[in-house]
Length: 118
Image (cartoon, rainbow, N blue to C red):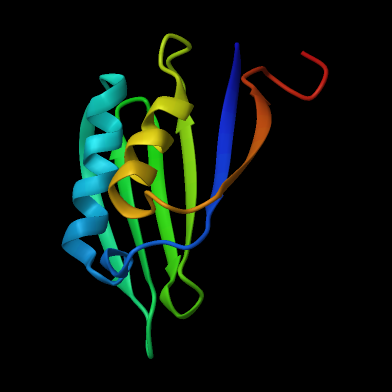
């Protein structure tokens, strides 16, 4: 089975990226946008600033990490259901947190198999 992990760097984000509740709400909305099932959540706040939130899904995960001093949000989305489009989740997160920003995406193919050769 082939999956695609999508990493997105979102620039010029809103001040909401400093708010753990807003980040969590955006990640959960991203999961809902693709029909994913949330099975857990975690939040870590860094000193002096920055957050990482993880939303654990029945289909894998969405992780958001912030650098508020640079107005930067990093998004890691992996969905093991091939019917779900990780870009839809990312678009929803960006719409909520970085609507005027620029987003750069990287796609990483992930293959589920017994080893590197199959």
